[in-house]
Figure 1 (cartoon, rainbow, N blue to C red):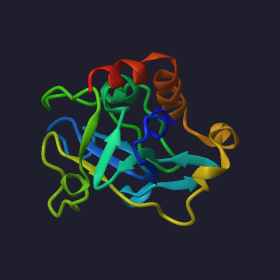
Figure 2: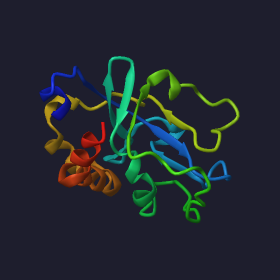
Figure 3: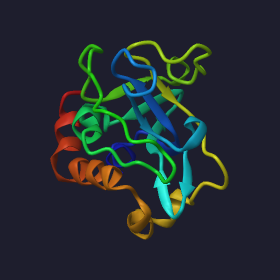
Length: 162
């Protein structure tokens, strides 16, 4: 809404996200996604990520919070619980604003350390224009935390640094 108010044409995108935070190809991946690395609704739970598209760029104001929210892992039904992520990747930026081609390449041999991968949605995605309030009950606690952080103070700080 802020970018739109500033006259920057923006649209929302929904899908999965994976980030290789450490050396283990399974345990050390921050994943806001469902099975097969895509976004989905599973057992009434939204497992995925929402970001912005400005022209050919991905804009994601949640990046600086990934490490903090990944400590409160939510495991979808049927997903094995793992040890905490061993963070060895370079520190994450507070936000991303970069060409989407940088992040959409499907890794053939797994993610490289520090690689971010934005993926698609599995099934029929929710209508993002219907209003976030109706989706709050099905969002994961991690997603609700990210939204609250952005609404309270982080978005304002991150825009000031542009």
